[in-house]
Image (cartoon, rainbow, N blue to C red; front, top):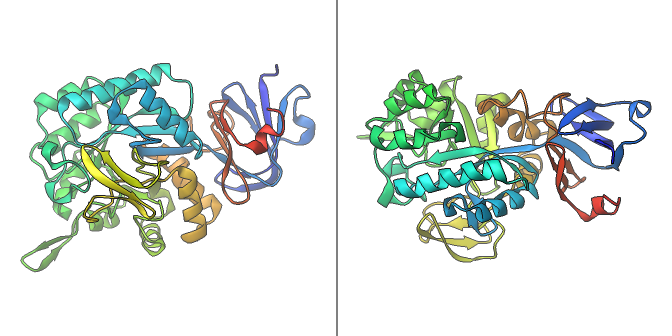
Length: 398
């Protein structure tokens, strides 16, 4: 069998330009050529004619808890395999699995399971590592995190987590907490991205956090502060995100958390290159409506999203990345090129993997998503392996 796979006649979204009736040649696990002329395509290559479809870089989701009834906190290979297969169907090629606030022992088990899955799993989306969302969060901005386990950072605890620093991609912390600044320094020392989130910090507290290395804001407008003290408005995390150009931000673009106008405002202020989109998907993504448990809390899965029982807050999302792309294009009004940046090159830059992933660039990993004209996934390729294909692709005998 040929070691080359060629995608033919697609509309390439690189995402720096659009190339109509273009081709991509994949050799092994890498992209060999982009936009090759027909006479440059090896005669023994396996060809996939995607005429009428879009070819994009593989989507990168840096904030995912679960899906298909499984959660990263289940701390098992079976659960993680369900998650990565489920999200691969939505075009996710690279995934950062997220924890929730829990006991030290539960978080350590989740880290160890992700570490093992990174080495052993070859199905679905590629696991980049883990995102510790908590337990060092603000009680006032806890959202759907279990208040039983929210606490201040202590070196005695987080140093145990940092023994797995090669497997931890990012940590979300409320920087106003006692000990949070020292934790930020330690994260930077270990090559981990310190993130501000679930925070009631003021502008000054965010500035102090940036001075020790915090540089990214977890799901802006979701559990991020605008502070009011004795009637006075005090700039909080949201305003700091806009004021400081150095901060990047992520949005939950599931069509539920943020209306189109608010996403347009975020992009207008921050600029397209400082924003990435995530799903923040939880266990119940892909399940029928009903009552479930997420992170030790009861949640309600309804037609319009997953909620805490009193509907005071969303409890994550039920989206996959193709849902995000369709929302950004069809509702927010972005071009497909700009929408693609939010889920490919931008998250790659934020977590420091843009030399290997994030664009259709020769020499980068062959992470490729093919979307039909309605922006629905027909094929997902991860490092040269087809991990999901629709009936459209099956019809070509692949």
